[in-house]
Image (cartoon, rainbow over all chains, first blue to last red; front, side, top):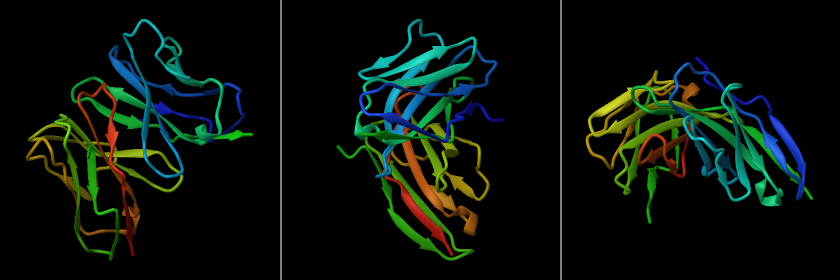
Length: 115
Length: 112
């Protein structure tokens, strides 16, 4: 069953503006986690941020923050002050904490930053 | 720091051939994963392992096999290659499931 959904195939943002990338998930387990990864055109996968389901505060890492709304089952990535180097594919990933801890990915959102 | 090393980087296989994609990590991580990424798509989990001797299927395990005899190595075996297995394969490792995963550079496989 699909656990993680990214509904924005592509997004544009003006340089220095903020942008929100959407991610929703589906689970009945109380314990889980959510990741965001960035994949530039060069192909490598870069970890950005993690949010655990029991974390009281939204995760932040520099210009990246995760808008975690548990009741709505959403974990949107907010990038502030966009830079040209932010142009990339962005993947949301779901950590299934039950049993073996496997991580599954959404299909991604392509972000393009416009000068 | 080597991190996660995948070999080969590129490979062309003929239909019906077999091969093993190698993955080694030097961070003493318990968790290791194999994903495939089709063009313009996200990553699909093939197999994963939570420690030596323990593996489990992911979303798309058919046509693949894995083993985890050591903490460091997690090879992915393709038996009877098919064109549908043309993809970029990523190996990843993490200390725990809820910690950052480190990815290899990927193996670009073409089956013709």
